Each structure stands twice: as structure tokens, then as C-alpha cells.
Amino acid sequence: MKPRDLGTTAQNTWCPGCGNFAILNAIKPVLAELDGAGLVPIENVVVVTGIGCHGKIADYLHLNSFYAIHGRAIPVATGIKLANPDLNVICFVGDGDAYAEGLDHLIFAAKRNVEITTIVHDNRVYGLTTGQYTPTSPSGFSGRSTPGGLEVSPINPLELIFASGGTFIARGYSNRIDLLKETMREAILHRGFAFLDVLQVCATFFNMYDLYNRRTYALEEHDPEDPVLAQERMREWDYNSEGPIPLGIFHRRAAPTFGDNFEDKNSKIPDMEGAVRRVLKGYI
Ligand code: SF4
Image (cartoon, rainbow, N blue to C red; front, side, top):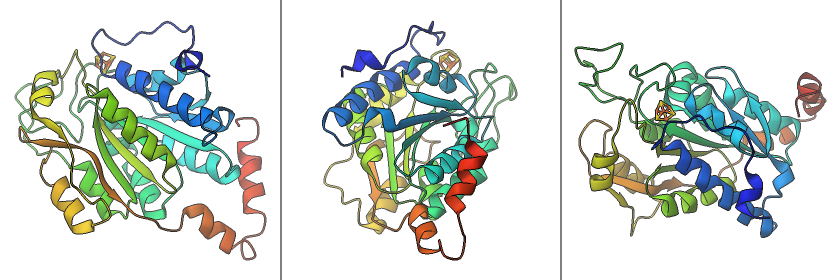
């Protein structure tokens, strides 16, 4: 399989210069390589998206896919994984989608260590609705809903997932595609909840190329299994200042997954898998 085999003929409607192109162009070779190596058969990959510019990625990937409603990609992905543990489920979500509408689902997926990969297209703005602030917009952000400048500080999603018990926490940048591919690959291979926040530039409503190009750098000589160091590195950038902005894998640890827990308790919850299968019948 070649990466181009994962493309579709759907007309791409992202704006010129949008960072979503880089995420699309990164995931294709990663999946082709994992399939070729026999690590992740392509027929077992399911893509779930939320609502927003990012969600169109489902149209541009020749893969099993499911458009969830706004903020609900993660519970759909969780259900798919529980119904068929052989599937490799990748969620593409936006920052508004994941950190506002779907925040509770994100926290619970991390806390439960659901075995899915979540890739956040974090452009720090609602692009599809023409430029309102999201939970990761910096203070002072001037957009459609805050013409006088945003008065509150952003959340740091990496710290949020760390506090929620996340077992794989990483950050990428859409304009550093080799590092992004490497991080995506590790996220997909992680056994548990893999969280990857991608600084995906919205070229139209919040163009951060200049700052990110100057201030991002790859984490080196970092031990992601040391939780104290991991948190220190996550705090290096608070999504408000100019950086420096570290990229790569901040934290990684092994832990039982949500699916493991169900297996342990199968005798107490009869035919749980069957129940989920019936709910999702016709969708997977
Ligand atoms: Fe990309 Fe922003 Fe255009 Fe949406 S509005 S397609 S995020 S550049």
C-alpha cells in the first residue's frame, strides 16, 4: 500500500495554507507504513471525527469512518473499540470539539485509559464558524465573539490530560511534519489512551505560523516515563506566552486499559460486548 491509496476523490475545501493538510499528509504514510509492517492492518482502522473544519478529514481518507456530532467523537470511538477490540480507532477532533463541547468525554477517556488514539487539531479558534475563541485561545485573542480581546487565560490541555490519568501525552505542530509523523506513529502503537495535541494553524482566522516556526523545538534528552519531568516540560508553555514550545512525547506509561477491565468483570456484566454490538449494529 502507498500513502496515495489512502486518499479519496472528494473535493478538498480547506483554505490554502491550512494546517489540516499537514495532518492529512502525515497520517497517510504512517498508516501505510504500519499496515506494511503488519502492525496495524488498514482494514482494522476506523476514523471517528467531531464537527469542525478538522472533521472533513474523514472525507479525504479512504478508511472506515464515522462522523460523530459535536463533541461526541470520543464516546462513539469508545463504543466502537468495546464492540470490536480488534479495531484500531483513531479520533480526529478539534480544540473546540474536544476541550469545550466534549471535555467530559475526553477526561473520562483518559481516566479510563480507553484504547483509542485522539489527535486534536488544535488551531485555538473555531474556524468553521469564522473565528470565535476556544478554550486554548490566548488571552487578548480578538475574534468574532471577543472583538475587544479575550479576557481569560487558556487551558493547558496536556496538563489537563495528565491530571486525568492519561498514559500517553504528546504535542505536535503541523509545520514540523517529520516529527508529527513520528509522534503519530507512537501514539497509534500505544496500548491505552493516546492523546496528541497538534498545533494546527488556521491560516484564515488565527495564523500562528510565524510564532510557532520561531518558538517550537523537539523534546530531547527527556524521559517520558518520569512523571515529575513530564509535568515540568508540559508547564514550559502555558498556551498563552510566546514559548519556547516543546514538541514530542511528554509522558508515557503502561497501565491496564478500559477493555481489560471489562474482560476482568465479564462474569459480573454478562454479554457487555454483545450489548454494545447491538447498539452499534449497522455502523461498524
Ligand atoms: Fe483551516 Fe482555518 Fe480554513 Fe478551517 S477556517 S479550513 S481551520 S484555515
